[in-house]
Image 1 (tube, protein in one colour):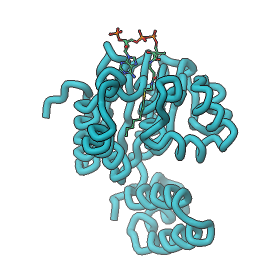
Image 2: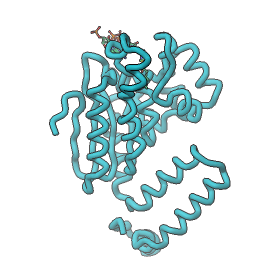
Image 3: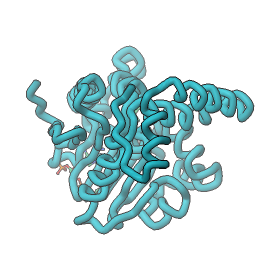
Length: 258
Ligand code: CO8
């Protein structure tokens, strides 16, 4: 399908989805969110794809939900339209790893979209923020919940109540992003991470993703049990035999997702 607000490229085992509304700093409008949902679901279903990179432009990952599109809407239109829901659901439904490669602004819904991904690689120029308070609203795509889990209550409150931006250095220090790289190295670094992920057993990869995500949803005891059961179940795979044999034979494992 031809998209108008995103660019999708599949190269080897990696699908890269680039948000592409440069005139609006990649603001998330209904069309972009619908296209993004579709592209994510397609990439997840594509057997060739083993990792997905979500990125924007050098100036903006995404400057938030589209304020111009939203500004005149009523409560009922927002409530019934719920045009953010499919994208939120789509990111949550993707079983393969999704890396957010963030340069420039990741604000409001843009910050929330990045946080929905599995991890964030940012450039030194990245700026994260939840400035919705300046518009007389609050975050609506998970910002109050996810940012708090990433960086703790004090910093999350500070961000949501003052609307201030966090630079890349603070974001890395606070645990919001996993790595900070020079601007021109962003896609190279994201691609290297995606290639590393693509080499692994897909069964173990999805199990790891599910187990980490479970830590947000359950008690420690239940989470530990979930992890242990997944760990045990991986001994039913050929990939576990191959991975452990390769280690002992001092060679690179050849995983076959079995
Ligand atoms: N929506 C629509 N258009 C935008 C947005 C946006 N979020 N951000 C920037 N643009 C547009 C500008 O209007 C401008 O367009 P034009 O040239 O036609 O005037 C163009 O992008 C370039 O922007 P600026 O000229 O403002 O560029 P600057 O470099 O001067 O400033 C900033 C960059 C600081 C990023 C600035 O644009 C800004 O503050 N943007 C808004 C950031 C913001 O408030 N984001 C939060 C939006 S609300 C939200 O995300 C809620 C999500 C939850 C929804 C859940 C529903 C269930």
